Image 1 (spheres, rainbow, N blue to C red):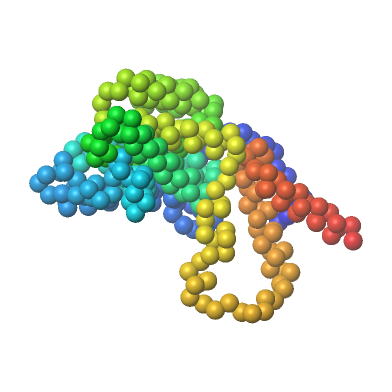
Image 2: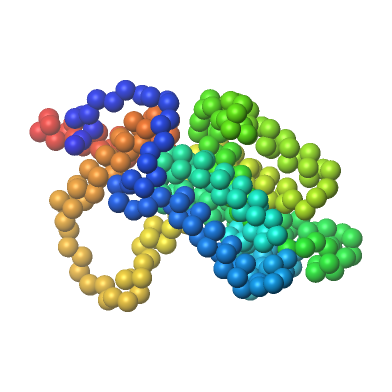
Length: 303
């Protein structure tokens, strides 16, 4: 079905879809992320044995002040986001509840692949920011990197990014705060950011306010700049496992029918996106693709 065969009216309201229903018949990325976090939590709890306050996995995978100046530890910028406190189950519980409630909506609007890229990048950004902050503090104070601050764990930076992006995409959606008080999403986002700023300035507790604010800042830039992160996908550059295991043919056959079918499928996806989120949700490249598709359809009808 092409562009001229559909009649869409813009609807700015958002209705969450069943998270297990996707065009690819694949499960929700949000649900998979929650499962991974919960499984890692219990694996860490079992491995840590009778001293859960000393997380075995955190010794290897938490992000630390010395992570930034040691490139061989840069994997910690991502892995810390899948670990949680073993002595405070609310840490993992609240993070996963937030990811569940806001992640499904954002995933529905961004698409599975883009949502996963957004979530992982937000965790990496938070890890880099907190490591850089404490590394700079160590240099300014003369305190050794290992002593300036403890390691950081938790998915809260990614969850904060998802929450703030939800507010940008659905500013007037009603959120039940504490399951009782309805508030607009944009107001909840302002409250979260403000609370973290005051918490960071107060310098009290062991909450990673800098990670939260880094996630919020990344989400705000992502929304305002209308970024897309496809270029972070190796498939975007033509890299895949098969490209390394199979020899490519020297001759490439021109298949116009395949190209047209691919263009039709992409146009259908964008039209569904317009129906779900409005035309303003399209990026510049997506708008240009629809314009080219529409122009080609008009020319084919005139000829």
